[in-house]
Image (tube, rainbow, N blue to C red; front, top):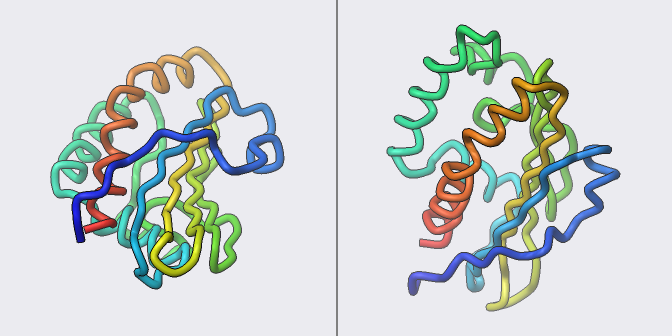
Length: 160
Protein backbone atom coordinates (compact mmCIF):
# COMPACT_ATOMS: atom_id res chain seq x y z
CA UNK A 1 0.00 0.00 0.00
CA UNK A 2 1.21 3.54 -0.76
CA UNK A 3 2.36 5.54 2.28
CA UNK A 4 -0.85 7.26 3.34
CA UNK A 5 -0.80 10.62 5.10
CA UNK A 6 -2.12 10.94 8.63
CA UNK A 7 -4.60 13.80 8.98
CA UNK A 8 -5.51 15.60 12.18
CA UNK A 9 -9.29 15.96 12.16
CA UNK A 10 -12.18 17.07 14.32
CA UNK A 11 -12.99 14.05 16.50
CA UNK A 12 -16.03 12.18 15.10
CA UNK A 13 -17.53 11.52 18.51
CA UNK A 14 -19.56 12.91 21.37
CA UNK A 15 -16.76 13.67 23.83
CA UNK A 16 -19.19 14.50 26.63
CA UNK A 17 -20.85 11.08 26.35
CA UNK A 18 -17.54 9.21 26.27
CA UNK A 19 -15.67 11.16 28.98
CA UNK A 20 -17.68 13.90 30.58
CA UNK A 21 -15.59 17.00 31.28
CA UNK A 22 -12.65 15.98 29.07
CA UNK A 23 -10.23 18.89 28.78
CA UNK A 24 -8.25 17.35 25.93
CA UNK A 25 -9.66 15.70 22.81
CA UNK A 26 -7.89 15.02 19.53
CA UNK A 27 -8.25 12.72 16.54
CA UNK A 28 -6.09 11.50 13.67
CA UNK A 29 -7.23 9.61 10.56
CA UNK A 30 -5.54 7.47 7.94
CA UNK A 31 -6.85 5.68 4.87
CA UNK A 32 -6.60 1.89 4.78
CA UNK A 33 -7.96 1.37 1.27
CA UNK A 34 -10.17 -1.70 1.00
CA UNK A 35 -8.70 -3.60 3.98
CA UNK A 36 -11.40 -5.39 5.93
CA UNK A 37 -10.64 -4.53 9.54
CA UNK A 38 -13.06 -4.10 12.39
CA UNK A 39 -12.33 -1.72 15.27
CA UNK A 40 -10.88 -4.44 17.55
CA UNK A 41 -8.51 -5.69 14.84
CA UNK A 42 -7.37 -2.14 14.13
CA UNK A 43 -6.85 -1.38 17.84
CA UNK A 44 -4.86 -4.58 18.41
CA UNK A 45 -2.62 -3.91 15.42
CA UNK A 46 -2.05 -0.32 16.52
CA UNK A 47 -1.59 -0.83 20.26
CA UNK A 48 -0.10 -4.30 20.55
CA UNK A 49 1.93 -4.35 17.32
CA UNK A 50 3.10 -0.77 16.97
CA UNK A 51 6.61 0.42 16.15
CA UNK A 52 9.30 -0.89 18.52
CA UNK A 53 10.46 2.57 19.52
CA UNK A 54 7.06 3.13 21.14
CA UNK A 55 7.68 0.11 23.41
CA UNK A 56 11.00 1.65 24.49
CA UNK A 57 9.29 5.00 25.13
CA UNK A 58 6.60 3.27 27.23
CA UNK A 59 9.25 1.45 29.31
CA UNK A 60 10.90 4.81 30.01
CA UNK A 61 7.53 6.34 30.89
CA UNK A 62 6.80 3.51 33.31
CA UNK A 63 10.15 3.96 35.07
CA UNK A 64 9.61 7.71 35.43
CA UNK A 65 6.00 7.63 36.68
CA UNK A 66 6.21 4.72 39.15
CA UNK A 67 7.47 6.94 42.03
CA UNK A 68 4.39 9.14 41.58
CA UNK A 69 1.97 6.23 41.93
CA UNK A 70 0.69 6.40 38.36
CA UNK A 71 -0.63 3.25 36.72
CA UNK A 72 1.84 1.09 34.86
CA UNK A 73 1.07 -2.16 33.06
CA UNK A 74 1.30 -5.38 35.04
CA UNK A 75 2.51 -8.58 33.40
CA UNK A 76 -0.83 -10.23 34.26
CA UNK A 77 -2.96 -7.31 32.99
CA UNK A 78 -4.09 -9.11 29.83
CA UNK A 79 -5.43 -12.02 31.83
CA UNK A 80 -7.32 -9.73 34.22
CA UNK A 81 -10.12 -9.10 31.73
CA UNK A 82 -10.88 -7.84 28.25
CA UNK A 83 -8.10 -5.45 27.32
CA UNK A 84 -6.06 -4.32 24.36
CA UNK A 85 -2.50 -3.84 25.47
CA UNK A 86 -2.73 -2.19 28.88
CA UNK A 87 -6.09 -0.56 28.16
CA UNK A 88 -9.29 -2.16 29.46
CA UNK A 89 -12.06 -2.25 26.84
CA UNK A 90 -15.01 -0.16 27.99
CA UNK A 91 -17.34 -0.62 25.00
CA UNK A 92 -17.22 -2.18 21.56
CA UNK A 93 -19.01 -2.45 18.24
CA UNK A 94 -17.49 -3.64 14.95
CA UNK A 95 -17.07 0.04 13.96
CA UNK A 96 -15.84 1.47 17.31
CA UNK A 97 -13.88 0.33 20.31
CA UNK A 98 -13.45 2.48 23.41
CA UNK A 99 -10.66 1.58 25.82
CA UNK A 100 -9.04 3.36 28.73
CA UNK A 101 -8.95 3.73 32.46
CA UNK A 102 -9.56 6.08 35.32
CA UNK A 103 -6.72 6.97 37.67
CA UNK A 104 -6.33 9.39 40.55
CA UNK A 105 -4.50 11.96 38.38
CA UNK A 106 -6.48 11.64 35.13
CA UNK A 107 -9.03 9.61 33.18
CA UNK A 108 -8.10 8.49 29.68
CA UNK A 109 -9.98 7.06 26.69
CA UNK A 110 -8.72 5.91 23.33
CA UNK A 111 -11.39 5.46 20.67
CA UNK A 112 -10.68 3.57 17.44
CA UNK A 113 -13.26 4.01 14.68
CA UNK A 114 -13.32 2.20 11.33
CA UNK A 115 -15.27 4.23 8.77
CA UNK A 116 -16.23 4.04 5.13
CA UNK A 117 -16.73 1.30 2.59
CA UNK A 118 -14.92 -0.20 -0.40
CA UNK A 119 -11.64 1.54 -1.24
CA UNK A 120 -12.44 4.58 0.91
CA UNK A 121 -12.02 3.05 4.37
CA UNK A 122 -10.38 5.04 7.17
CA UNK A 123 -9.27 4.39 10.72
CA UNK A 124 -9.64 7.23 13.20
CA UNK A 125 -7.82 7.25 16.54
CA UNK A 126 -9.28 9.71 19.05
CA UNK A 127 -7.92 10.45 22.50
CA UNK A 128 -9.82 12.01 25.39
CA UNK A 129 -8.32 13.05 28.73
CA UNK A 130 -9.86 14.52 31.88
CA UNK A 131 -7.33 15.63 34.47
CA UNK A 132 -8.08 15.71 38.20
CA UNK A 133 -5.19 17.60 39.73
CA UNK A 134 -1.83 19.28 39.18
CA UNK A 135 -0.13 15.92 38.67
CA UNK A 136 -2.58 15.07 35.90
CA UNK A 137 -2.17 18.43 34.19
CA UNK A 138 1.64 18.20 34.44
CA UNK A 139 1.64 14.64 33.09
CA UNK A 140 -0.60 15.61 30.18
CA UNK A 141 1.57 18.62 29.29
CA UNK A 142 4.71 16.46 29.46
CA UNK A 143 3.46 13.67 27.19
CA UNK A 144 1.64 15.83 24.62
CA UNK A 145 4.57 16.18 22.16
CA UNK A 146 5.12 12.41 22.31
CA UNK A 147 1.40 11.60 22.11
CA UNK A 148 1.05 13.16 18.65
CA UNK A 149 4.12 11.27 17.34
CA UNK A 150 3.00 7.95 18.85
CA UNK A 151 -0.57 8.06 17.50
CA UNK A 152 0.55 9.08 14.04
CA UNK A 153 3.24 6.35 13.96
CA UNK A 154 0.72 3.70 15.06
CA UNK A 155 -1.71 4.76 12.33
CA UNK A 156 1.02 4.76 9.67
CA UNK A 157 2.09 1.27 10.72
CA UNK A 158 -1.53 0.09 10.56
CA UNK A 159 -1.91 1.41 7.02
CA UNK A 160 1.19 -0.38 5.67
